[in-house]
Image 1 (cartoon, rainbow, N blue to C red):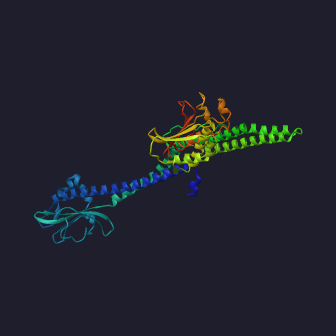
Image 2: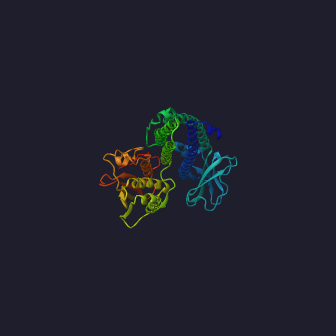
Length: 487
């Protein structure tokens, strides 16, 4: 078995094919042999009945009371075969009245039984004193008014010789057929597995520099086509992982360069000459602000990378979206009270079904949206939160809309606000500039959950961000590529 495992798949397939064919041929040969033997035995029995009927018409008693065969028997060419048969005739007392020369004085079948050949033709197998296997048939027939028991037998030696030759012929032909089948199976296996060789050669050519290349799927409906599709999905996920890594590196380099340069330049300029103590305090304060902004940017980038790396619907639990919103509002309570913002909550329906998703990630996404809404809301304004349900594509979704009273979103920027490090052209918004990653993180998390996030372009005053989350997990198939939904 270990030797078989060390060979290639093509050879193993050919060996298994030959082994299965050999098993089938063995069963077939045995079945054919038994069927042929039974068929020939039945034919012999039928011939014996015809011979007995012929004998019944030829037997007669002569003037001396001796049982004889009709002398005209030898003039019938079709009956001449009777000379090769074994025949014995007994009277009702079991005495032998006639015995063929082929028996050479040996008895045929021994003493007779009371019911032998009375009602029909009795068939049985026996062996003579010399070991000859005989198929015997018995029948009672009246000859000139006297009932006699006629026994007629065929030697089975010719049949056995014929079946032996037939069996040897099959045994001789079987290895030849298996060898031919082995060569044919090897060629068929090579032809079937050729697409696999092409797939392997193609996969070996794909490196980090050409992850966009894919394996050709010749027949998407067979097993090899399925394997090619799985490998293409794997390459697609690898390409996404490389793209995420490159994007993270580029984003980090882009966003960290400015604060690091500002800290360095501030320190170098401050140390060039002696300055008043207040100047040092201002420089250190500016460097501290840049450090805080740098820390926020790093935290955002790490959280974004974590959201991209996490699998969809990881660690799903059941929780209330309303309770999660109240938890986040309690976290922002200081900022809300500082700006004297009034939070208004509205429920479109009384029934609030639990949400099944990754609570920690949904909390991050909702926190980013609520924090933006509070940050851009003016003092003594209102913040409206609307809860509801929607049906889309025969699926149920929770919907939460957060409507602030801030400056709103400029025309043409409703989709762009989800881009990384996006800065709005609206002056009131640009003054509250942050890391620019909050909405990007929220978009990625919501999309990974199978929902969608968007800003309502019909909002007249302020910005209205709506989040739709599926009530249950399992809305995204494993292997689906990431495609943001910012309708």
